[in-house]
Image (cartoon, rainbow, N blue to C red; front, side, top):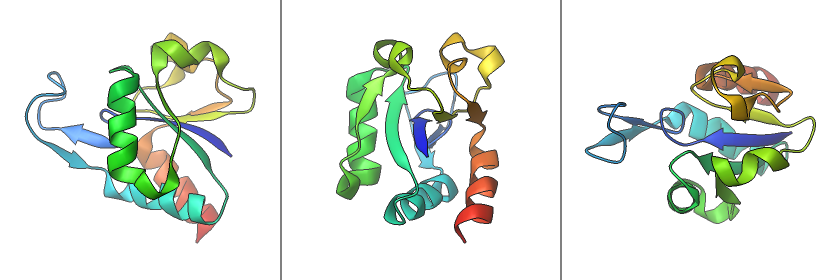
Length: 121
């Protein structure tokens, strides 16, 4: 399953989501855990991407998924190259963001955790 995973308010939650990149954040440990499990089982092919840009996506990918050496990108650089039958995990749904309309399905983070737990465990 090819997955494009958003960073802000998906993998990490900011104390003030209206002011990301400032202050503190907490990790979405449930989502991070199921992604790692799926990658360990070779079920998921994950790319980390962010509207905050390629540098931010890469920093988060290295910090959270270092051993997996995941590709990362900014959303604006990548959204036109999304392969068919790809999936996204994002805190927004496709109808709310133009760059998400290319995906077969967009999961909210909690939806994907439930889906993964039902299919991996």
